[in-house]
Figure 1 (cartoon, helix red, strand yellow):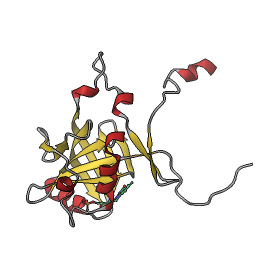
Figure 2 (cartoon, rainbow, N blue to C red):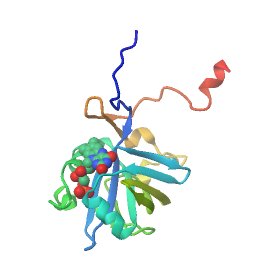
Figure 3 (cartoon, protein in one colour):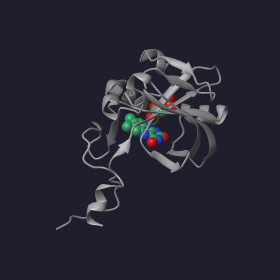
Length: 182
Ligand SMILES: Cc1cc2nc3c(=O)[nH]c(=O)nc-3n(C[C@H](O)[C@H](O)[C@H](O)COP(=O)(O)O)c2cc1C
């Protein structure tokens, strides 16, 4: 038996995306965004209400998109519950911004994997970003030069229980396991 839950958005899992921008004074800011993902091969999409970040995006036409990890859960949540209009979030969280070499937006030492993007379009709260570069903290590369997903400890947002969960155990091989029943 299945139980109907109605029109409620029960979507699992969601990412914990951290959008990094500069304001008109060159001050770095971060916000947390779960309503986003992949748009096209080289593009990302995020659904945004008005924030300090959206003003920054309109001004600079650039942003970074990082993926929160188990080592920065508290700060990443803080970046999603307080506006940069009210507090200097970066200073308060003691994060370390560094200017991207590719776009007019900050990277943060605390986030190991980051996509550096230009704003392709931002209309009706839908941000489409074009990836100009991706960078990773070398200490999370394995001996083959690949990103060590388990070592990084990416987290996801569980909207069913309002919690963050560690993305962990590997349970299968994509594009391969299904061949067993082909
Ligand atoms: C888990 C979580 C997910 C969020 N997802 C989004 C989102 O997808 N879109 C959005 O507009 N705001 C989202 N927010 C809210 C913003 O992060 C929040 O309003 C933030 O204070 C905006 O910061 P800013 O004003 O410094 O840009 C989310 C917050 C949390 C805690």
